[in-house]
Image 1 (tube, helix red, strand yellow):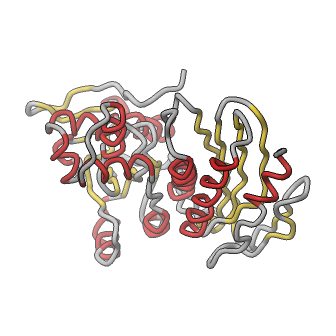
Image 2 (image 1 turned 90 degrees about the vertical axis):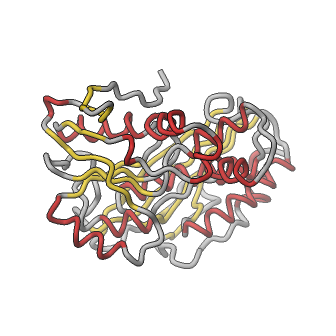
Length: 322
């Protein structure tokens, strides 16, 4: 089966308009380009993510898990901007035309796209080492996007959800841990990140800066510090840990994974102290946990962790490809 047949059979039939998705698609899958319209009063935000076999996932990872992981990680970038997901383009590099693999992948991609209200509007397929690339598009009100560059001294540093679970999930795969409820929970956190779209939209009126945690909390907060020209102090004891990670490993390891494990795809954002009370009120009926873990400080202090009763400088040990 050639690439055009693959597209016609497994991707062109995907639902072309999900409930809540943007309706500005004049031309979608099947032409040289998609033709799209940006709504009035909105700005288009675009991000692209790539997963490479052996670098981002193990060789025996099921196709359906890869679809969920690829789209969840990509949409998480939109969440960090406070954006509403809209469109998706997809590039697949496949070693060969494995119809069973493509069928499983496309079915899971359809489910994930429905969940995130994002529409596949185009893409490409080619032959080579297994590589998956998703480019996602979303919308924010003009000049309302959350950025990395506006954190101010005194702002609270907050994170969503719990941290370290994805790294623990990877550990269960590397060590081939026996399946149980704890192991399955952690693996799901690795395979199926939950982009915090609704949280990003909720905090956009209060937060001064935001980033999603893909390379580890320390590595990603450093991006905010670099862009904003500030420092940060983080208390490891304040990091939110799930019951599952605490059951799976010791406290020291869990907190190390929470700081540097990466791929949690939670949000890390900063909030001016005067906005914190109002934000807390709006979070009362929100279904995602938000936890303050530190504060923005003067740039001269760099990045510090509270340890053994004092603040100590620490390197931003996030994941780096090169």
